[in-house]
Length: 301
Image (cartoon, rainbow, N blue to C red; front, side):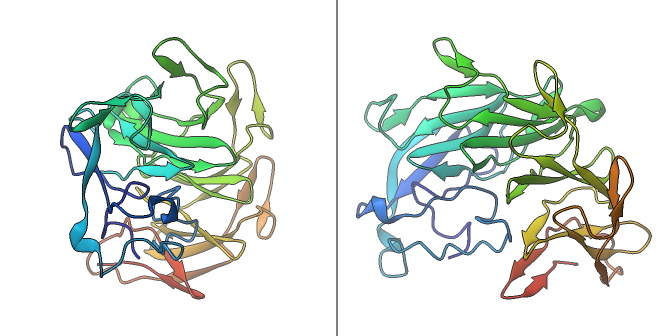
């Protein structure tokens, strides 16, 4: 099942710039719904929810609203993310985390308030927040704003480490100077993101250890690659990173995920393992690559 079709309590999408995010579900076996931890559901960005067994053509007509969570009208049109009974959503001020209609929820109809929130980078705009990415006990989110403001931030997914106050507010476990509203991707302990300011593909240690220093902790890329892309989420599959590029002609470029093959220098800069030309008559594409069944797909219209 592709993201954006059926909406359930663990895999949902925002409704444009509305004032609330509506979370709906079939009133059967909610525990059977799978987690939806990132944009397009997995590192390959193919949107395949193969583990979803609860919602299908036979019961989609019975979907109805269970609860809502208030969000700013400045929220961009990104999806929400869900894992282990928690829902993570971009907000005008950064990140908001909710329970699945239980803790901090009340009223008829049921409205839920955040369990904890986290701030965005100074200067980042609410319309420039990426969909949260959850993995390794951490929530990752990038942002963009005016004058190249924005950054990549990592928070404790449980809202404990680096968190305090009532209501609870969390500070980043680490951050990096990255400007991206489309967000990072995670695979094998590494984050991959395209910085629209530097126009580079950048790889970071998701633990916030390698290349990271200071208090608060700030991280530098493990390796970079010039791609010239304005806006896309890198796809990761089979030990490779797939991106659309604008360096000269429009292409799909594929890089070694480990930052080893075709990579050199200090700091490390990588060149593509291979490229594929894309149609350019319609202009440059900002689409992410979808990798499925050993085939890479790109919307080049």
